Amino acid sequence: MKKILGVLAVSVGMVTVASAEVIVDVSDAFTAGKFTYDDATIKVKSSAANPRGSLEYRFNDTPFAIGVEYATSKNEFDGEYEDSDGTLEMERTEYVAYVRLGGRNSTNLRLGYRNFEYDITDAVIDQYEGGTLVEQDINGIANGAMATGIDAELNLIFGDKITFGVGIGYTFFTGAEYTWEYDAIPGGHQVGSAELDAHSLRIRPEVSFEAMENLRLYVNVMLAATAWEGTPDDGKDYPGFDVYSAAAVGLRYSFGK
Image 1 (tube, rainbow, N blue to C red):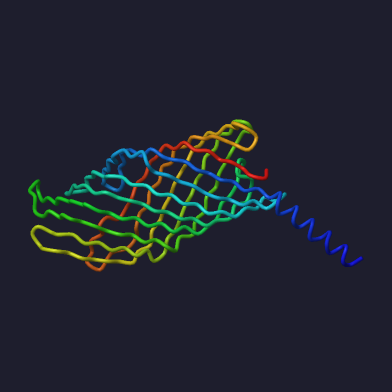
Image 2 (tube, rainbow, N blue to C red; image 1 turned 90 degrees about the horizontal axis):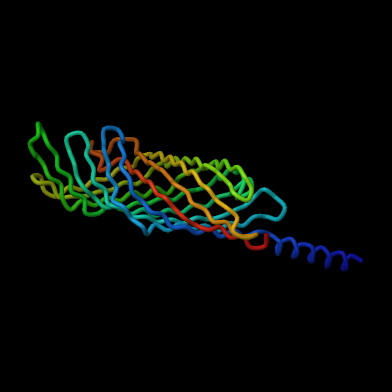
């Protein structure tokens, strides 16, 4: 009898695992925009290849899921800040491991660990005093490695076949490693580094509709800003903020639903 009960228990466990839900989410975003942040005006050159994808496993008959997400994007910036202006290219790479409480297509809370890294290249910054050019920084590169980010995202979603929602997310990064170098004219080659705290805030309205039983198609718009707190050793931050705006289209497919 014990053997029979053991076999039944294993069989039930196998059925439970097999009927769990796996959700695949893929999208691509078009980025562009113009922002004002703390005396800085930033223009973002449009880019159409900014993929994002996630894989999520939802435990059967529970509101609990675990998942991973990956995203990458690249933009050219043209900005003005106080008595300076310049251009640069920025590439972002993002990884998130998370747990989600609540259904994917209904109101839910996502909590996770976010690894976010950006690389700046081809930076040129002109600095002025009284309208006169006093320094030009060229060949600028910088890297921000933010590997200790605690992330929270609340998704408020309404509807059934067609849903309307908004996601609000926040990440706090501690000990972000920030390095940069450039050639100053005059001044020569400059190198610097700092360990700073960073805050990142995002908002993402979304509309989705059910194309078939296990497939939803969606469009969303995301606005995000990341800012660094602290003062590097030399007193200069190069730079201290990042802005991101994108309109995305994607699909969300559920296996085993």
